[in-house]
Length: 178
Image 1 (tube, helix red, strand yellow):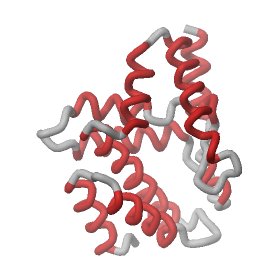
Image 2 (image 1 turned 120 degrees about the vertical axis):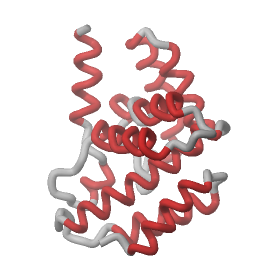
Image 3 (image 1 turned 180 degrees about the horizontal axis):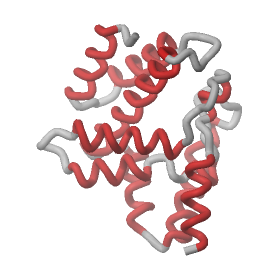
Image 4 (image 1 turned 90 degrees about the vertical axis):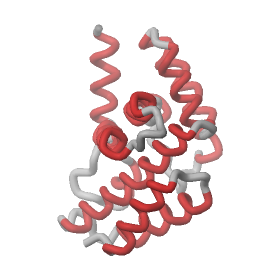
C-alpha cells in the first residue's frame, strides 16, 4: 500500500514540463492531464470502440512519466524517450504487481488498435483545450493556442485518426478557441 501511495503522489506532483517551460502559472500535473483525457474518453468514446479499454488507456497513458520524466519534443533527450518510458513502464508494472499496466502501455505506444489511436487523439485534443484554458485565464505570458492547435492539427491529420477526433479538432479550430 505504501508503494501505491507513493506512485499516486508522484503522479499528482509531477508538473507538465511543457507548461513549465512556457512559464504557465500553476501548471497542471501529469495526473491532471490524464484525468482530462479520461473524462474526454468517458464522454466521447463512440459505440464502435471499447469504452472500458479507452478509459484504461487514458488513465495510464502517462503514468510511466513518474520515473521517465515528462519529456517534450524540444528536450535534448527526446531520442531516449522510448527507452526511458519502456523501462519506467516495466518498473511500474513490477511495483504495481499488474501486468495489465504494461500491456496497456505497449498498446498505447504501438498505436495499432483503434482504441489506442483514439485515446492518443484525445491526448492531443486535451492539450489544446488546456492551452485554451490557460489563454482564457491569462496564465501564460504568451498566447499558447496558436502553437498547440497547430501542433495538434499537424499530428492528427497525419495519423490514422478516428473521424470523431478530427471533428472535435475542426470544431475547436472553427471556434478559434476563445
